[in-house]
Amino acid sequence: MSKICQVTGRRAQIGKNVSHSKNHTARTFDLNLKEKKFWLEDEKRFVTLKTSVKGMRNIYKHGLKETIAEAQKKGYVKIV
Image (cartoon, rainbow, N blue to C red; front, top):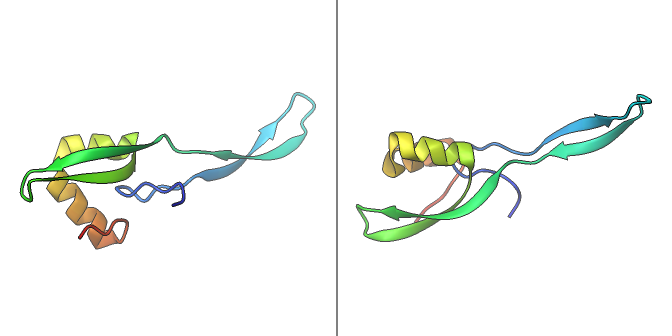
């Protein structure tokens, strides 16, 4: 699976390294992705999500059920 957050839909960005002599070389700005298990209380089971730390903050702030419902609506995650 690629480096995409399943909660926020964020992806790695592309940019340039710029040296002192102003040489530009391509580079990527990767996300701070973690694979973490969350307890889904309604279904009494764990759900494993590949999420960025910003996505984890959304889960802790708004709740797992609401955050997953929004991510499914946007097409970022499919949980059966």
